[in-house]
Amino acid sequence: MRSRLATSLLLIGLLASIPFFRTATVHGAANAPAPTWNKQAAAHYLDDREVWWQAWPRAQKDHGTLCISCHTVVPYAMVRPGLQRDLGESATTPPQQIMLASVEKRVANWPDMIPFYSDEKSGPGKTAESHATEAVLNAVILASYDSASYDSAQGQLRPITRTAFDNAWALQESTGPLAGAWKWQDFHLGPWESSESGYQGATLLMLEAVNLPNNFSREPNARAHLDRLRDYLRRNYAAQPLMNQLYVLWASAKEPKLLTRAERKALIAAIRSQQQPDGGFRTASIDHRDRIDHSTQPTTSDGYATGLAVLALEAQRTPRRDPTLSRSLAWLAQHQQSDGAWTAASLNKQRDPSSDPALFMTDAATAYAALALKRQP
Image 1 (cartoon, helix red, strand yellow):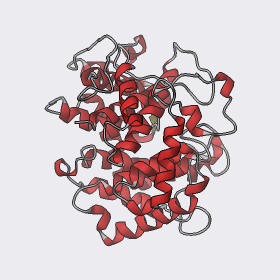
Image 2 (cartoon, helix red, strand yellow):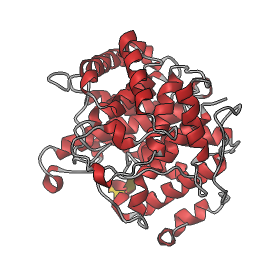
Image 3 (cartoon, one colour):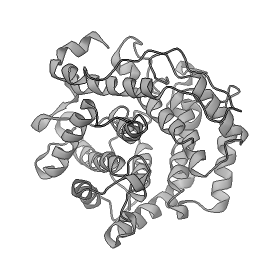
C-alpha cells in the first residue's frame, strides 16, 4: 500500500481488516473449463485504490463528500458488490461503505450539493455538464448495488436509488440533438470526459436501469424516460466509435431494440476484426478518436478494451468455445498482475508510471476484467 495512504489514518484503520494478497501472474487456457484468476487479489487491488482515491485531496468535495470518478469509483461500484458475494464476504468493505455513504448523501441532498466543476473555475457550460454527468453516474453506482451486479434475484430496489434516477430524469434533455440524453462533462479527455463520452454514459445508465429488480424498467415513468434514451442511442449509434458501440451491445441484451439484427451482426464482426494476435484488444484501436497521439500508445493489448469486448460478447450469450471469446478470456486469465490488477494506459498523455494518477485506466481495466471473468460459470 502506498505511503501516501498514511495521510488518512481513519481509512487505513478501517481497511486493516482486509487481508493482503500477493500472487504470481495468473495463467489459464482457452480450452480450460473456466478461466483461472484470483478474485481476492482483484478485490484487494480495487479496495486499495478506492482508499487512495478517498484520501486524495482533489477528490474531496462539499458537505464532506467525494468525487465519483469515471475511472476509479464507477467501475469499482459496478463490480465490487458481485465480488463481495462471490468471495463470501459477510459485509461491504470499509471503502465501499465510505463511497456509498458519500453518494447517498449527495443524492438525498441533491438541491444543496455543489457541482464538481463550475463555469467560474472551469469554463462556460461546465456547471450544467458536471451536474448532469454526476446525476447519471450517481444512478449508475446505486443501481449497480441494488442489482447485485446484474443478478436481480439477489438485489433490491431502494428508495435512495429511485431518488437518484429521479434526479437524472429531471436533467434528461427533451429537445435538440441531445434529446433523450444528458449534457456531459467535456474536457477533451478520453474515454470519459470527451465529446463522445456522453453517449457512453447514457448507455451505462440504460444498462443499469434494465438490470434493476422489481421490474423498474417497466414502470410507466421509467419506461417513458428509457424510451427517449433508447431513441437517442439508436439515432446516434452509427456515428459512434467502436468503444461506445460495445457498450450498446452490452446493454442490448436486456434492451433488444437498441440494435437491429444487421447492426448486431456487423458489430460482432467489427469486434472480431479488432482482436490482436495475442487474443486481447487495444483501447486506442477501438476508440478511433483523431486526437489520440497513437505514437505514445502501447502496441499491446490491455485489460480495459479486452474486458469491455468480453462483456459485450458475453451479453449476447456467445458460447465460450467461440474463438474470439475464448482467446480473449485466455488473455485475461494470463494477464492478471501480481497485485491483482489488469493494466491499461491513458489515452491522453504519458503519465509518470510511479504516480497514482497513472493507474486511473488500470483501475477501470481491473474492474472490467474482473466483471467479465466473474460472468463465466
